[in-house]
Every structure is written in structure tokens, then in C-alpha cells.
Image (cartoon, rainbow, N blue to C red):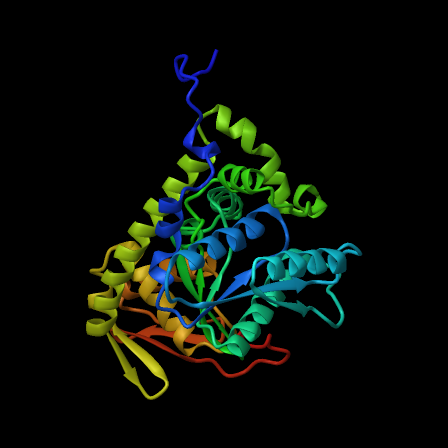
Length: 354
């Protein structure tokens, strides 16, 4: 007997997308000149392409669709999979481009390196196509997995907000928008849509390889769901945290505009005013200042938290000074002022992240 009390009506999560659903997914993109669709050939991205094509056919004018497959060169099957995507895209009347990740591959950290390479290649393809947006097929399930992965690493509020429906990617190829129209949709609906349409898709075995972090969390999801931690609840928490994170950023924007003074390459904050701020606002303000003047990439949250404790203690005593370096920034506390300036370059310093 079904757990919902005996109803045999199928769950919405198992229903294919209707025409009205599709319009809601893509309607805000109708004025774009071109859209790059990131299509690997798996069920999620294949469904993204299929749905985008159905939407585009329903409107009189709209963006050109360009499907882009990134061949990471990590599996023998990747060439055939890219070819299969091209055949499907062509049958749907969509232009297709295969971008290849060439050169030496790292021996560790493959998922992160592959992700960076993928977005760089997608940004290049977007520039070539005259597109300002890249559409990815991240789903509700991906959002929940991302939240759990970041929670296990001790991420702060911003990290736990997980992925946004829209974000920006910056590379040497310029700025491009990343749009995730399927982010609040479960994977099961995508598969149901493809099965109804009779559209084939590839099966990437690395998605189940528990040597990698994400597949390990994916394997745990059914057990977590039994305790109420199913993907929709986890994703809802991520969105609520994103809302709180956005509100906090607005408060920090205001604090920065009134309390932080730029003098040359330095940032100066009056210590007495800094001490009146809520702890989270003070933390973010200090973090921003360090990232703005530092030359060794974004500062780690845990290290900024430790530094904040020292800064607050020193500022309160007002009888001693503090001098610390973090992420290429020099933090000086003394004489009623918190000063953050670029630190002198150290030997063998890590390069600043782009």
C-alpha cells in the first residue's frame, strides 16, 4: 500500500514536463541572442536540450541554441558519447560543438580540475557563439548533494547556500551567466520526460564511482531520505540559507560604505565602530577587506574567523597592537584603527587565483 494513504495518483516528481512547465523553465531567456547548452549526453543534460528545443519551437522568435559537449579525455567512451550527442542535436535541429580538454591532467583533484576546465571551455564556446548565458542541467538532486558535500567540509553560510539559479562565471574569455533552469526539478522528472519521448541517453559510470566524493553522498541519499532528509528538504534549506546570505550581504554592503575608507591601496576601519557590529557582519567586513587588497587569492573562512577573534580582542583592549598577514594582506590593529594593506610578497608565494 502506498505511504500517502492509499492514493494511486503518481507523484509529480515522476511526471514528464508539460508545455506549461517548459514555458516556466525557459521563459525568462526569450530575449537572449543565443544560449549555450552544456550537454554531456547523460540524462540530465540530454533532457535539458530536449526541453529547450521544445520551448524554442513554441515561440516565434528567440535565441539560437548551441549544444556544447566537453570531452575531458578521461574515458575511452567520451569520444563516442560526444558523437552521439552531436547526432541527437543535429536530429533536433540544434548546432553542436565539441570542446576538448587537452594537455596534462592532474594526478589528484580530478573532479575539481575537470569542472574548472569544463567551465572555461563552455565560456569560450559561449563567446564564439555570441551567447551571454550557459545553461547547465543541475537538478534538485545535485543541489542536495552539493549542500551535503559542503556541510561535511565545514562550509559557512555562503557555501551552504549551494548553487544559485543564476550565477556568473569569470574567465579570460570574459563574463558569462550560468543559468540552471532545472535546479528545482528532480532528476526523476527528467528521466520520465526522456522515456516518454523515446530519447536515448548515456550512462557515465563515474557518477557511481565511490572513489569520488559526490557519488558517495549520492549512494547515501536513499538512507537519508528515510529519515526525512530527502533532496527536496535539503534543497529547501539551501535556498533558505541563500536568502539569509543575501540579506547579510546587503547589511555588509552598508557597513562597508560607511565604515571602510580606502586610502591608497589600504583599507582603514575605525576600531570603535567595528566593535559595535554583529559578529557575522564584522567577520564578513574583515573578510572582504582582506580579499580586496590581498594578492594570494580568497582568504579561508576558518582563518578569518581566528583572525577576527584576535582583532576584536586587541581593539577592545586598545593598549596593545596586532600585526598579522593572511592571504597576501597585512592586518594592523592599533591606535584605534584597523588597517588592511597588501602584504610584501613572500618567497614562493602561491599565484593569485583568477
